[in-house]
Length: 502
Image (cartoon, rainbow, N blue to C red; front, side):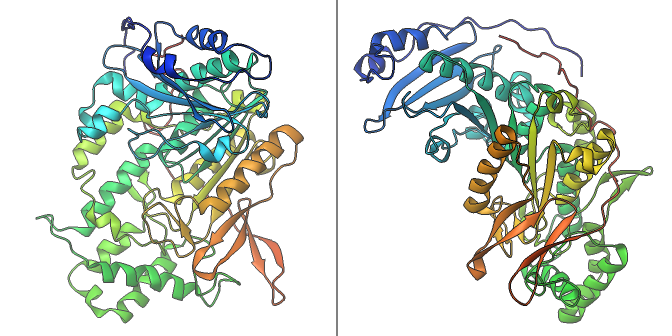
């Protein structure tokens, strides 16, 4: 992608003066007047940033919300939000919060401000695209820059400025949390802008955007015929997923056996056996070329000897994937990879600058994730390990947790969905703070098992916690994966074309 040169739009005025004038700000720690505080916030505005709304959203606690818009170039409109606890309540931390899917909305920040931290987030600059239901391939170049890497970085820069203007000092530590698209934002920050955050928690990350796009093509192509009619019923796909769990029930330890797979990886021989069991339970799966199609869904997809997609993990329910029309054309996927793969991907193995300044990262993959296959996530982690000089060295800075039974939001995870639930999120937030600030590295993440009304620990990769007859948890080791995905356009640039520094 050639570097682009562009001008910056000239922002007009101070927006929302009426709302600002009507807003009552309580003088806090330093007895600053509301007018002085407003003046400091207004000083943050420049050629990129315009504050559009400022209000006390909780008079009891003094929680302040600042909405602002960033315009890096014509057609760039990035909506952002900062929420700031009152100075006497602030714990000195700042949390950046990721978006999901194609963005276009402002995520809620209460879970972060409730811990007395300041928090910032963004719609990633895609509101008009999402509302207009425009396909990503048709977005203006400016919007694609914002979505792929720029919006999150600029949000962070100006969010920190808002914090310093309000409190009179910069955050002591900055953290980022995001899943799915937010996971791609997280990795992009660590790789491209390593000084932005001290600690990162990412779950079910879509950071290998092109592998996910190739997988979307696999799901569409192999579950529909040439006329785009569905080949499988949802019951057939559910039977395939359940058969994998039943097949492994004899070998999986407690408490996973018969409930969900302890490990979502499978050998070709195991895939064959799982599918054979599914066909035995539902003979209609033997009709036509159904078995060959199913095998393709759970097998790495290679072109000219290069692995472009890992396929899906056995036990994953792919019924939702059959309904998606994304990536119908193989040609369109390849063209996108060649033109934009290095922008949208954030899976470079070299995170040295982030680690060198003390950065820590926690990654969660879901073994039953139907949207973001866990296999490219494991593959990327192994590449990081190879670059760092081994698993032990990598675990000093970055730890992967592969959670059984966990699916993406909207999926049918046998344990839970949506990033392992609120218990996992809260646990991850505390764990990353302990790691960064006190040097206590996490050896587990707690995940909800909603059907059984309990939680279970997920070990650092490649470990697994198993349960004995007394209900006690002990760690056991599993084999590690070997990297499989070809690099092609998957490696991202450390300094993307058209980068903006305010």
